[in-house]
Length: 110
Image (cartoon, rainbow, N blue to C red; front, side, top):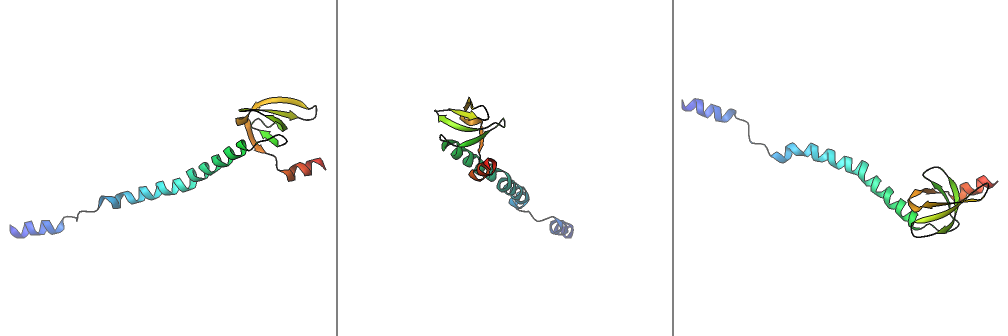
């Protein structure tokens, strides 16, 4: 009988560390964070700094696809002049998607 009890104790699996079971999950979460959330945060910071630095004379593209030149800047609104009829539109600062680079503006004028 003692031999049977001794044999059963030897056959039982050793207690594994529970952290070892969570390592793959932790690894997947870390990869997801570095591939998705960090670039998204970086892009938000760049967008916020671009919106904070808007000034008269900048050529912008709105989220609706309108290209125009900033005439004046208020707290949360911009007045944008749109060509060819020099129509002035009042838009919110958050509606600006991007600045038109000066190189592209020079190419379009040629």
